Image (cartoon, rainbow, N blue to C red; front, top):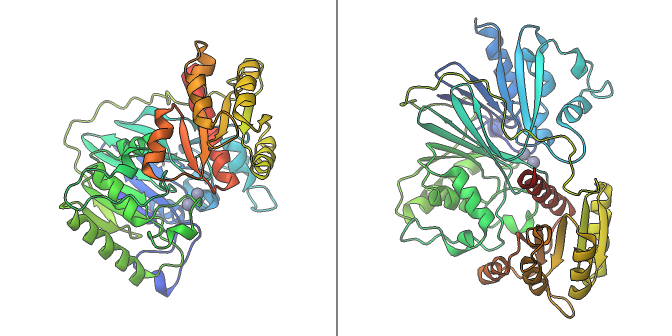
Length: 453
Ligand SMILES: [Zn+2]
Ligand SMILES: [Zn+2]
């Protein structure tokens, strides 16, 4: 498999003399399998260069698979400028997280309305198939893709691509689930407690496990991160720690901050290499650079191309609620938080129920059977953990399996462990951004939908 970085910058393009070595274009990575299958991760401004290179090559038709992590601008802005989409005879499969609300085709068409662009999506010459994904595994050519949700203020998927014994992981636009620094111990590669107490961190590490190459968000440093929490990006120290915990062989720092010039990226690389050495590891770390090519030998014989459609394709607008309505129960004794969450979630079309104490919450959960519970920890009367324990003890699986997202100011590892021991599904630390809560609500409803269908 050949990998080429066409865009490594995060957030917005930053061309110029200060970004010449690592590049100014936004996210786009090409992976070409030995069987010829072309996979493109994200469609930032870097995809323009890939399109021109594909046109210049003799091979026709130009077919491929575009795996989009999420539809924030820096991951789709190159889409209208990707030349292979304009030629008839080419076939492109486009994958991105599905969910509630606007569909993938509508989102991509939105940035190509005449207000923004002279050619509409419907006028593109290539045959385009849209696939809305949830978490899961599916075949692409002789390879296999595993999609897993990331922690970002939009529902985003990370992708693991395995082909012929070679594995790459593309995981950008992700931030830690815990607020404490990951504090990997300096004497072994065992993950530190702040990483292991949160099941979502372990899920993330499993996505990266044993990969030959991990391409990972590395936009900030631990020192910068407190001002950037909730923005959905990783401090490099965390990036190194999850890659070490996953026993990855190589780590490419990715989604470089637009404010970080080439020399500053070099400094990040030094910082990361020191951290790797201090952990007694030989994992290779480098900063992804535009134009850089990496070859990963495919040792095992490739499987016959399957062309199978994703097993995890999202299924339209099916609701988890038998009444056809998605109900979310908000429980917090702080009226300001309730009002904020209510405003955000009503915009999503959810039916909102409100409780200000644990007893009322439990009663509403039983009578109204919401799809999801957003639950404060410390409240008058029964606290959040007691409410959660009571629900988990119910015999009705709708209640005992209900996703419970705990909202709390308690951020230490032992608090997180206590929360999960009480049966919470997810643990969000205050203060949080409305976009972040919205994203977690969507994610858990999608997972719940997948487990029910
Ligand atoms: Zn981004
Ligand atoms: Zn993003």
